[in-house]
Length: 201
Image 1: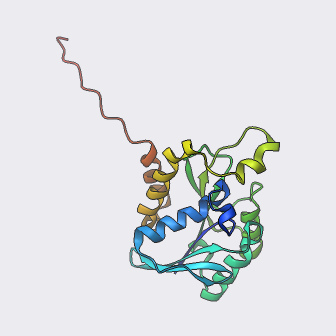
Image 2 (image 1 turned 180 degrees about the vertical axis):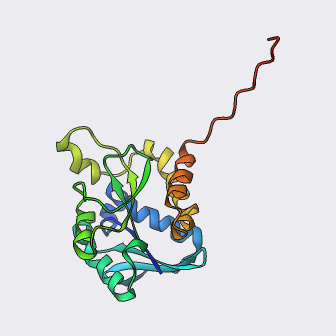
Image 3 (image 1 turned 90 degrees about the vertical axis):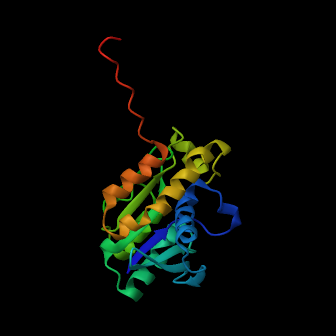
């Protein structure tokens, strides 16, 4: 079994926040792959389904961002899920909007949800970092993160979420780099080759 945890804050007040892009990502996976309806479990909203022949548990912790580890840790212990089978989807200030990067382990880089999860299960889980961009000034970080996505963001947000959902099976297969490349192509399709000039032109 794998665990895909999307991070965010519960309630309609926060639903459109940049900080909730992790919730949005796992919601897209549920819609795309016909997972079960969300139900309360592990201090979370939980959904189950199968991707590429493997059972996957999706979580949206309802503990608020700073305590995300309580929910993730409970699910990991209950099911005996290996740490390298835990993928956490979350907002990343240090990536441009629409960029997606995967890494295993490392520090929290100031993200309280990641810090909480590391405290409960250790740091060596997989991180699916979903870029939301940095406002440029430290004092503006909190209103930026807890602000709603702007209308202009829809141009990249919907394609990225759909691509994450479309290619989620690659994570199950352990093909993390291929997943990252495929999602990148959703916003940056390859340019068609320019026609070659003839020698006499």
